[in-house]
Length: 473
Image (cartoon, rainbow, N blue to C red; front, top):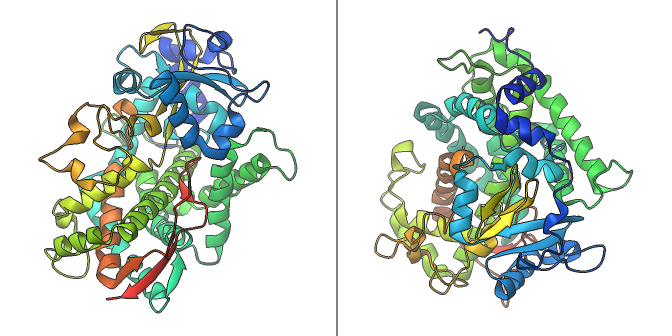
């Protein structure tokens, strides 16, 4: 099948839904989650305040809310947010049931629809079952080993140039600085170009789109965040759509070009709208989640400087000033710190699903159309599986302790099952490439008496941007 003959995204969705009972049933479900959970005393939890439920508590401090609910009701519980009853799943047994979804009871598309359905329309998380499998298979072409080798070679000099701009500064707000750098890296690796004067507009469009995902009013009302988010979405659509013809004709090695050329052995490929949708979603995911992860790591390394020194000693084994593809598995302790930062501050703390049929989950009868939220903010802190779960302790991931292996789903910072993050190995590569250069150039510390205040939703970020003091080495 040639690219020109490939069906449109809408045609493909209708065709898959018509031929797949799972999607056909999901499409018939109401846009509003099943109210049967609300006020159901057989399901542990409560409905919160009149009218608003737990919404204000969730927006104000989601971490405190779910930890408090889990302490009172157990790791699986119901609450009410944004007008909908939700079953929050935190015990690894129930998490495994949802993420592995052996019986195809749970829709990712419907689970995310309310939050990001328009903002990141038709991204990979918003596709299910056979449709998801087909799209994921095409996208995996852009993450093969030879492509990844090229990506790290693109990133290394850009990281060096970015760090050159940090030199000579006594202090910087790390979140803001690393967000700009990861956007530059994303532009090079994903888009194949430097954004230049457009960088601020693109960055603002992503920020507005992500923030709009937790808007209480999901309507394009002037001055409200959801309208800004949708305006950002439209800007990003134009940005990518205008560049597709050039990429289809070219021979670039960036991810955008890979998507424009990708064809599986079965002849599947992407049309223009599908490329736009996937690029918006992937660049957001790579940009914002990596920014969050590196910020968490920077705080931890500044708070616990002995780990800075341990990682620097480990990095002495890497020859040259850049990380190579072959070096990626050598930085074992760096991987521990990365995993521990993701345990404490998971970049996607809530994974949305919707039940498409009546089923049992965690010993609870779940009616069809019920909203499900798999919550790593609960799972990653369960004392049943983690020693001193509120402590920063990267050695819990060492071969001797392997606390993350006490259950197959006690740690799932990259999701699980068919929807496991497609870019998890790319994220690991990017984090290590950055840290190798960063820790070789700077010793970092926090201001005296500093207390981290992390906003966990929609993607974790420090409320003050994380001020860091830099000392050249």
